[in-house]
Image (tube, rainbow, N blue to C red; front, side):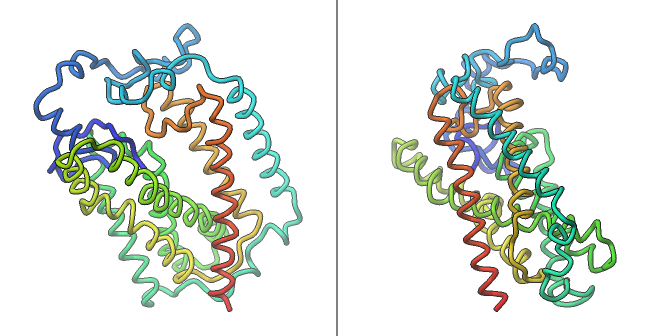
Length: 328
């Protein structure tokens, strides 16, 4: 679920970022005078805390012109009064919910007695599977640790992918230290966040963004062909298609089956809130609009932001139903 524009440098470059499109890459190969003209130095960290600086730290609210395709009214200017009121409400509600969960009796908070079975023993087939996938994802991550691809880690897709990577690593580590309650808590905290974020990435990208860009963003047959060729490169297929497979196998079939509870939803809500704040307080200020539908400058943010909550609630009940059937 990355943006239509990016700073990737080559269509055939295996290091190309998950958000690049063939049209952008071709433009960069040929040299874009307007883009070169708009190149500006990356804002300093201190600029984020300098009250004399404007909220949007880049000209026209578009980082080096990569997001000029986003309507100008969504890139800079005052936030909608709806966003100003709704965001504190969201923060307060989630914070209160997490605090309530933390103050509940310990027996309700602990997952110790809710797991049906044990995590796979070291050397078992399921443990070896988790080890292999952890190493595979680690390899993929290493290919994205370059100057031209580091920006992609700011996207929701890579946040989800990183959560998946961490849980696979914990699935390998915990059986080696089965009495560690810290490891057990961490691996269980990430169960629903992995399922939820992988589901959202898979569904929204493959059934909303990809067809939307293909049918409405690509104006001729050649661009459509290049777009599909690029979007189905091996790396993007891993990030947008195989991610849901990795999440299901790790969180359901290679982990002890248990029903989700309020604490699982609270963990996913905290992660979602963290990304919302990152997007609005960092990426928006840098003019990186990977998801303009969530712009705080339109009252329609009430709908788009609320849809996030609806997605998470729906996925909670969906995956709980799946876990119940698998457990039986």
